[in-house]
Every structure is written in structure tokens, then in C-alpha cells.
Image (cartoon, rainbow, N blue to C red; front, side, top):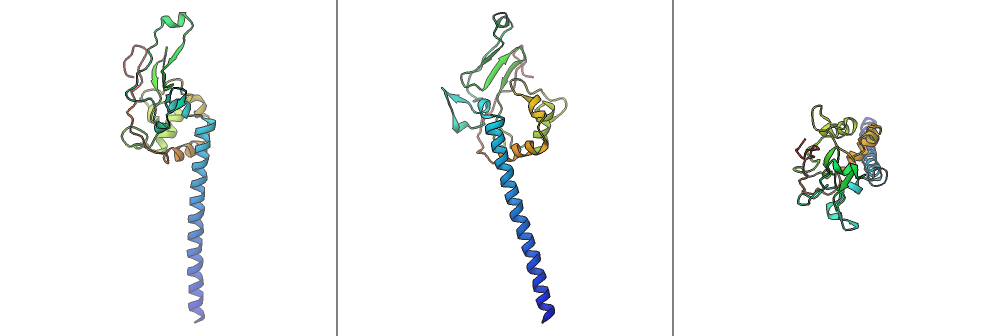
Length: 187
């Protein structure tokens, strides 16, 4: 009988430890997502470019979905620089054109076809560190005004928190144009 009580106590301790670790893991994941939300919305201000505007207001149905697929975009030419015009933006404030070419704020939602849904955490961190699409050597550059140099300086925990948050937002199907080089051709 004493042995049965000992076995019961050991089983209860093991189950309790598993439950405690699971709760801690869920809390840690929740904390990470909240940290990521703070970094995306406040520190990084990602929505300023990746959430298109409708007039002066952000189109929250397109939260972090990038430049709308059907929207036009600005076209910069080098003669504009002689007039002091270095960058143009679309009315949605989600497409940009300058001497670097034309860039479009990408779809950061977890949509599997048009967003980051097929990306891995490693690809995301690699892109932020290298300034290359999906963080892969030989891929196209991530163009201005994306402040890649600033994101490259963030620690892994913050980048992982941003990734954790982006995986929780509503997926939005929105095929964003590929960036164009200064001559208007895809990179």
C-alpha cells in the first residue's frame, strides 16, 4: 500500500511538472507575440508602409498586406533629381520610386500564396540580417525605404518576437508587384 502511494505521488508530480511547463511555454509564447506586436506597431512602425492608406486613414482590412495588387505606383526618373525630387510615393504610401528603382511594401501577413505563410523563421531573420529576399544569397535586394540596416542590428529575440506576431495576424491574399530596377524591369 505504501508503495502504491509512492507511485501515485510520483505520477502526480510528473503530471504537475508537465502541466506547469506547458503553461509556462504558453505564457512565454504569448509574451513573445505581445513583444512582437509592440515592436511591429510601435518601434518598427511597420504599418506605416505595409498597411496601405485610403485617404489619410489606414485600410485596416489590408493590415500589413502591402501595396494593393491593383493599385498604381509612382515612376521616378533621373531628371527629377535635378529638381530636388529624390523619392516619390503612391497615394496609398505603400509603393516608392527613386534612383534605386521602384519598391512595393510586401505582404507581411501569413497568407500562404501571397504573404509570408511559406517562409520560415530562419528566412525572415536572414532577410532582416542580409537585406536579401528570404535571406538567400543571390536573391533580389530589399529596397528602400525599408530600413534593413536598422533591422540587421536587432537581436535575435526581437526578430523572433516580430516573426511570432506576424504569424498570428489575419492572412490577406494580396499579390504585391516585384520591385523594379531603375529602368523599370523586375529585379
